[in-house]
Image (cartoon, rainbow, N blue to C red; front, side, top):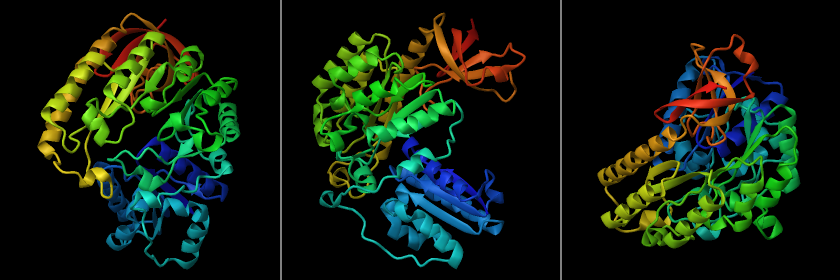
Length: 454
């Protein structure tokens, strides 16, 4: 049978999708990129915020249309299913099978049962709605990580080092969906990294909901630095980066490792969410404004070439104009290289959803626009400062008209940050793909760079 996949949401979700593709490939199913030709369609959903939920529902309905053609079975999995299973089985009869995250160990049995019977009875279950009920959800097995089909090309791959989250920020539903934070064993991660390197992968990106918590549940302390030190020894890997590092977990030891480990990209993604102490406390964040300011100053002093990225929430319940202004002024003062902003999304079951003084949508949008406008100016100035500087670029592809070769610097995360466009003066550009090329930046366009090969 031919099977098609749709993966929504974050890179952590993508790793799950890649593992499931690997399962089907090992069972001799044919992977189909055209949904109209697929006999089975699997959608891995996101349920993080309202926008992602809407995208998931719309995608399910869109894929359901292919049941008029060759599609025999429509299967939906992932975070949305874990969170809203009972509601979904009532609302979407078009879906033949829903598989929750806590059912992944029985994934293949459920698939074979569906194909054998043609239809499976959908029964309700008790969702996790209280902190006291949050448990560890099952992780993928080591062979599932190692046998996954990499969908991100030949240059880079994600490695999931932990699952779930135990931070319990008041706005976030992830602990209720993905359970408590659980780390993978360091030897398993290293084995996966070696296998990826043997296939030609040049860059590995470590991901978890909070990478600084890696290892605490297994080893009694954070083992992120140790993991980075061991990954450096793997031949073939040139760039290592780790994403989503909460500020309270960024220690002096970690800063020094980023500074001195020549394979670690000088790039830190530090979600601070806000800077007002009142807001940080209501969000149940573990740092204060003063601690965040001190940390950023420390990082910039120790690693002057560092690229700093953060994420913010505007319109959190009770956020006053003064508190928003404090955040906006902080952004202008610090000048993050990269910045993403979310308008607060009221998520059922979270403490913040029950808070008073919920902010009107128009106010959220206005505050979002102000932050992003300020960041646009900061970003443009920072990019212009790169003109005439030289960078090593990892070449990934060409534009459709073949006029430009396209790549990234070590300061840019794939699919999130900007690209580098290099005018194509080579007859055989294929030889440059997946290679590192020394370039000089000659211009800026929006969030991207224009360069020439030196």
